[in-house]
Every structure is written in C-alpha cells, then in structure tokens.
Image (cartoon, rainbow, N blue to C red):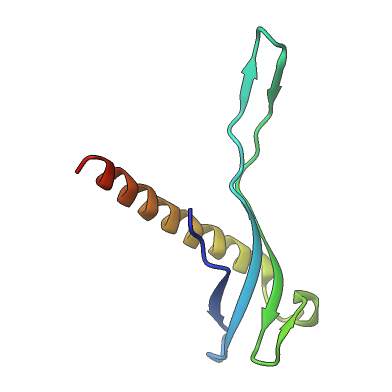
Length: 96
C-alpha cells in the first residue's frame, strides 16, 4: 500500500499545517492450537511524530494547543479510506 508521508490539517482559524505520523495497521487476533501460540491482536493506531507550520518540522509537544488525539483519529480515518480505495482498485485490476 502506498500511503502519504504527511497530511494537511487546519487550525480553528484556518491556518494550514502538515503532520507526519507513524502508522501501525494492527493485527487480527489469532491462535494456533496445535502450536499453542497466538496473538491477542491489536487495533490500528497512528501517532503524530512531527508538525510543520511552515517553519520546519517540530515535535507536537511544541504545539500544546493542538488536539493530537483528534488528529490521530482523523489520520486513521483517512488511512482506512485510502487503503480501502487501493484494495478496491487492486481487486478491480485482478478481475479485468
């Protein structure tokens, strides 16, 4: 999957800024009874790593006014939509 390296967001007063993030797609729960191993699984997650208001990349801690949890939730929604579209495109090409 090709995912963007950064996303654009806007502050309440419409100031644009970019956000870089780390992304973990998550893992489905599984268990192999014959081997006695498995994984409890985990949900996808995104973590904001850098913010750029046009002055270069900085840590999100430099911007306490940003709602990082809401930004991370929005990133997850955007990534889920992008991945869904890419899977649909791939499936469509396979059946042509």
